[in-house]
Image (cartoon, rainbow, N blue to C red):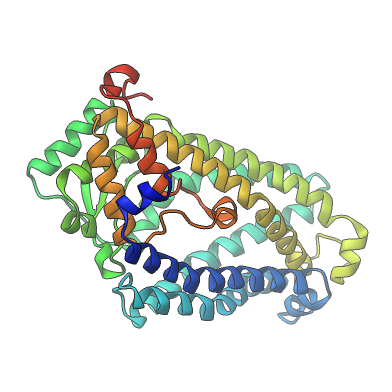
Length: 386
């Protein structure tokens, strides 16, 4: 990681102070929101409160499944709105938000319209299985793995267009350069699209979305209007690294296996009599146990979070190395990291504990240090495959 002198050379004291101010305004609110959400799960899942809440929808099995889905989706959303709104206010002060409150509310409603059918479908299938076979957990584990894979493939096609508009990039040198970069990397790309991210944010980003014949390079319009063409190429080169190393496929397979294993573990816990008794239900097949299930899943997600962040940092570092090998352009890479960090008001070196727990990418200082240590002719020595 860069030392203080290197960091000072890359970012001014004012820029570092501004990033720290943003983090101090956002991190406590976001962490508090997570804690309150987990507390809600535990209070309603490990007491009879959740069972009473679901039971209030009626005594019929279908009514209880509906009650479980509605309460599990709507209550956490409502509880999280004040924290999300506060984070948004802080980010607006730093010029990172361009979307109005009406647009933000519409996005929340869209998210709800996606989450409710998914939640109802999963609970309906789960409790339907639990009511007819003692081996429900095997089928549920298989179903969780399949759903993970299906959503990984379909989400870019079904959900992305709900939140952004995509238009083909105008023909020109940059589009040609991005397509040439993909060809050099051996990645088949259907098109280069521009996302209208500026409707919501000033943040800079790009990504490669889809599989096979649906794969496309997506560039934020904010990146196009802010960064130099060579910097845009480097961002895309990083994203192509994820494709070359099959990070999405590997992540999908790992996610499917983790989902299946998680269901098996949850099955052992939600059928444990002391927990069922605490939740106020006699058996798991009763949909009033939905909050107990959610509480245990939330605890598991919280515990697994730092491990997932560590794996993500490793994957992102490999993609950085791939971008440097593909382009052999460490100086523009450093310029790109500086621009991304300044524009996104990122902190070059965030607190270590916070980064270990939540950081999904290497710190900006670490990424710049990697580029500074990149050997001349690194692309020829290491190859674009990394």
